[in-house]
Amino acid sequence: MHRTFLLIVIFFACILSCTAQQAVRPISPEDPAFDATYAKRQAPVVRVKVLHLFPGEDSNRIIHYSLTTPFEPVGQRQEDTLDADGSFTLHLDFALPYQQIWLQVGRLFYGALYANEGLELQLDAQVLRGAQGFASFGKGIRYRGPDGPLNAYLNEYAMYRPLERRPLLRRRSDLQTEAQARNVDITAGYNRISDSLQSIQESFTLTHPSPYAAILINEDLSDYYAGLCGTWFGKTMPDDLWRKMNRHQPYGITSGGTQFYYYLGIYTRTQPPGKYASLTSAMHRLDSLFPPAKADFIKLHLALGRELEEQQKGLAELEPGIHTAWCAALLRLESRLIAEKIQAVKKNIAASAQASLRKPFSIGKTIAKIHV
Image (cartoon, rainbow, N blue to C red):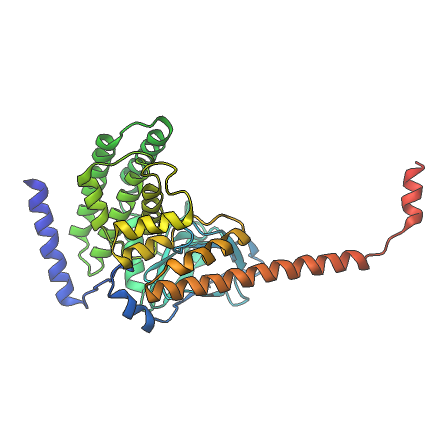
């Protein structure tokens, strides 16, 4: 009764907030309506600006970031440096909704950014330089641009009641590991921890009404279902749980949302184990279980290997089985980017080989070493 009453209060608080601000109406990438939306989207740009850096403060000029995409739940870590004026610009390749970027700027900042239309992150080194540990919200951190309010809201939540949330998240992760290692059902314990996390989430959304609350709640649900789905590989989950997972539609290209689709794809391939091992059979399996738009989007998350050549081959196999226009366009773009990476690697190898051939070689020194 108390939980129902609290949810009603949160609902009306969100309604009141949205009347004062423009309501956010996310469309999930698996929604057929997203096909028309994607064609109009422009790939967003993320800009970072660090103020008040000292001359020679090189350690705080180093940037590390990783991008979440449908093809990679946890993107490869990349490194770059701030320009002389303390700025950095990241042009994203894909026009995806709420694409998550994990960003670290020296010892000043670490957190998740969300790019939908465009974002500017401003950091004040003078304020952040002496802070204890990393933060993604608070003094010295400003989110600006079209995606500024969303990023401020989600990162304030990330820093909300950390002494309670973080141990709960670790315990839930440990349960997932235990379930996979020992092949046991941890649903009851998993749900108890998740209920505690939901109480914290409800406390935040009640005290911080926002038009972005739906995105926050959706992301937490994606994390919940992803973790639970991963404990049922090779087994058949209860019908009611399967129906709930089937209905869930992540809004963003985030770690939670991408992991959810990735695990859902693995789960369907293990029913029963071994039957859908090939990529072609896995695609047919998805077509038989889900509506076309959802099936196509899950196909993009099928494991394609870590090597560039493996990924290129896998994308070529996927292409004939993708029927949704925006998914097909995304796959072609990823294929082009992979091909460019392969060519760049070959070019670097060839340049290294040429440099080795041009390197002076002293046979006298070599013979001298032999006689030592």
